[in-house]
Length: 508
Image 1 (spheres, rainbow, N blue to C red):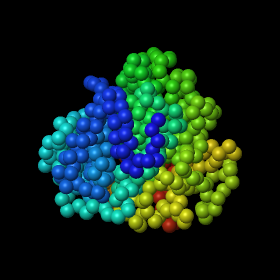
Image 2 (image 1 turned 90 degrees about the horizontal axis):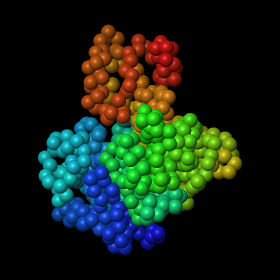
Image 3 (image 1 turned 120 degrees about the vertical axis):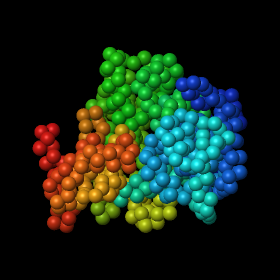
């Protein structure tokens, strides 16, 4: 296995792999296969295209993408140029995409039109031109965009966007060192080898897909069964016939797979090569864990990570069977603290906020010093807003969130950004958005609307407005009118009480 310390940028890891074994199969698509050498030709072409467009060190290149070889090539080409790859899911609305492009101050926008109808729809809204790669289209976003300078320009490889409680997008800056370290840690934690093949449907616009899937596979030289979306039937076929050895995804993916297998009457799927199963990105329900382990005859590994720490902070040990939903143990290069409200360390077994620092920690949010200061603590610690405790053996149990973040199908949904959309509607006085656990381990999004006195709210029109401005996974499954919201004396909505009242009225 290649050693990563000599590499300072992520493309150098790929270049070394491609030089070492150009004919090694790397990407497996439904309609063909691509070797490392063939992908290198795409990286070369895009590098030249970026330079011709005037892209330089510290510029941002935004891509509205679904997984495809061209997206991988663009990430690596950006690294060669020194630009920062800013991936956003193509299934975002036009309004959201415009917000991310503005936040990134992107010099160039790309669209993965070859694999994504959503990307084609976005591209149609811009004055695009053909890329050197037919599966991409591009447009000059902001010729006056100011490149990042100084030490930060050299360190950062990519930006992952996440929306905060205010509804405004935040750009998490991921460093080359952090991504290289995460690729190494992830590969070593599952003894990933060149002969392995992972199911790569997780969007590489998110840290799970970019780090756990892509960077780990580059580190090990392992193959990827690349897919632009999740299809249970395709997973079933890949397990049985395509040499799939690694299956990773959020709990909601495994729930969907279990449901599909049950609908097909499959008690034990054929998976002759499968040796590693992993879930992350969302809380894990013990019943789902046990069901997956029973179905596959393998332990379901778990971990805890987030965009702000370039992936995993903790991971379960390879082959370890546990009767809990522990997120495992600290990875190499990471530090962890469990603290009380005053930032004092708590002993093992006590619940507090999870703080972290280490190689993978972000330098901050892109051009958001005020928000960065809010989460960074003395000594370089990042306050996650998540609640957890450590067992006596050091295993981390994540037990809740200080933030009100909702996790829908493995994606983070912040109530503030959803509430902002509803509050823009005439006649709306107050909005409260909350999550509710569902039987399959996912979360429903509930939106409660309090009209202004005397105002009439057309719920169907309001829902259509939300549909236009919110991605599918952010759209509430319930939009309900309330006469008056329960509130504290200080004016804060009591969301738990509000949900409980609604459940009682609905008989749910």
